[in-house]
Amino acid sequence: MDLNHKTAIVTGASRGIGKAISIALAKEGVNVVLAARSEEKLMEVKKDTDSFNGNSIIIPADISKEKDILNLFNKTKKEFGKLDILINNAGILIKGNLVDFSVEDYDKIMNVNLKGVFLSCQQALKIMIPQKNGFIINISSNAVFKGYPEQSVYSASKYGIVGLTKSISNEVQKDGISVALIYPGGVDTELISYARPDIDKSVLIPPEDIAKTVIYMLKLSDNSWVDEICIRRRAAKPF
Image 1 (cartoon, rainbow, N blue to C red):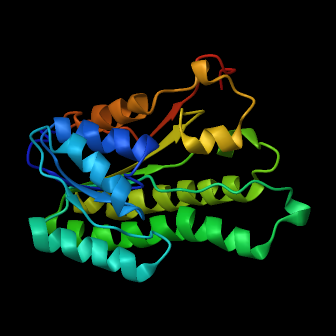
Image 2: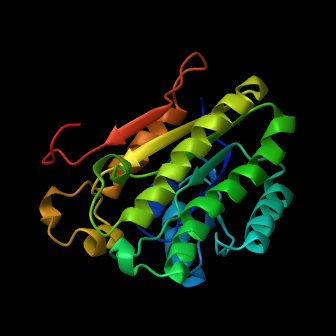
Image 3: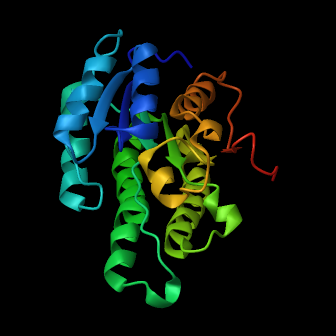
């Protein structure tokens, strides 16, 4: 697909993987809607995206809140008249042993990592189905395969994204919409510094590698699609 003049929403765009994806899309001439809680950090990303051919706009949003998501998608449609691409990247991690884990922290994780993806996909499809085209890429985690200690609720939320994505993909294929998953391993972000402080930063995945993967998927021919990609640290054990 030629990405020039396409319109994309990227959640969690203010830093890390979301920032890298936003910049990569802008380099391809995409109109990028930058969504995250921090308007100040989004302004910094916009300086980078505006240096390329794309036209980026900022819409502050807390993905755990339905009213913010409705505002995000309504403003995007009003500004650009369409939505071609949704990248569900926003996510949080709170570590803790399950026996001591609070319901409050459980809700925080699920509201961002799973409910936010559900609501964003729902609103995106309300725009994409009438268009008869669109692309949704949901960022999960290879934590779903590993079962790391103190990450049970985080892993469960990322597993939820897998089930949601696979079901949606089969629902909307007939409408010309493609839905996919990316499972990143240890990416050099603030989240991994908290989640796995034991990993040497020199072997972490650059966020730009995840962004390149998104571009690869979107630029495949009309006859091809990739349902899921798992990206691990080269230093980590295969599979």
